[in-house]
Length: 375
Image (tube, rainbow, N blue to C red; front, side, top):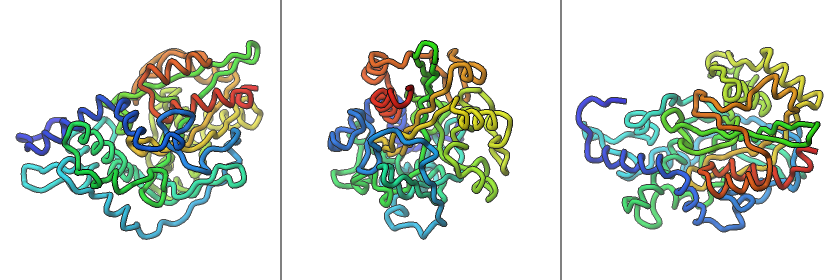
């Protein structure tokens, strides 16, 4: 975007750190993970977790109970994090005032193609340890995560450049455990590894997605499994909030957009949750042509993005009717060439390619549980 008038030195400093964050997200996430105990990481990756978030075996998605609660008053911790202090996070504008929130700075100085504060289902509690399978949500907004987790990532990048807050100060010091859902607002992303399984050969393949930093507000420049999307209604109205409160329904919308290349429909209950594609996907789920599992939950060490790790195993004949393995561009980046679901491929991706922590974790866990998933 083009700004009217010259930038302040504070804005230039902010953009310098933001540019460093955008260009070095993978390395920064690896460094950020080193600040947490190795035992808190998922399958040796950078993704963080906590007791009760990793089931011992894959859980069928439909066994996870969802609970929605009306929002309570914002906690003091969450309220204070929404307007973090410090020049590295909130630059000064030419009129002498500071941007009130980190999302305002992004919108004013470095907005991606789509950057809207849409309603979300905010995660407030989670249990995935077989004896208790449930996720609890309330109302949230997309910028809740930008104003906390993305701001914390900016702060970490500034520290690497020698411009961060003093030790013991700032957002990262205030949130000792990113997996503590009482300590910060958490929007849930559903990260799905899609496996095309050929029953005749027993082999499976999968796609990765490169997220274009010019198009997305989170994890730009990184590889990720596909599809992935924030768990949110398809519109801001109460009817959408009620109808779309389903993990499967949210996943189907992302399949339609990221793998079929269909435009996102956002508005007053305009999502295609009941359209022909959605019905075909749900029918295939009911007949076993699609099998969907949850492998756990984790938080990114850099941005605190919270991901539900899922796997969708799709019979090859159905996959080929609905989708394509060919590399191509989409609205959020590029779908990369298909890869074999094999240990050496997964090892190479995780060790050599800039993949998001959640993507690395779901690949590792999927291989560990391959007999259940693809048997």
